[in-house]
Image (cartoon, rainbow, N blue to C red; front, side, top):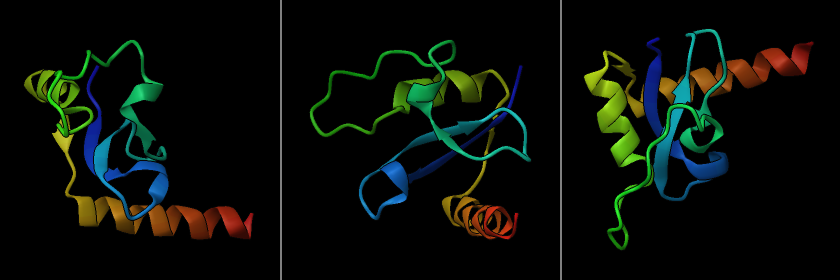
Amino acid sequence: MSGQLCWLPKFQSNGDLILHIRLESYQSWKPYTAFPMLKVPDYPIPGGSKGWATYQKLLKSGWTLIPTEQAKKGLVNHSALSVKN
């Protein structure tokens, strides 16, 4: 299985970035913690990036990193579609 990874603010806020995952390009982004079968424990580093260990594992497995700005554009487009429906 391979999917897409990106770094987005937690809960779509303007805060710290955490790893987000989607299994298919048409799906919405979800925090890595929503995928217990894929995530690995975070490194015990104070202030460390949430999801960094999972990111490393999935990237080595062939997952694709999507730039944050590109993923944010997809969030806007996805939100606009859900409002119309």
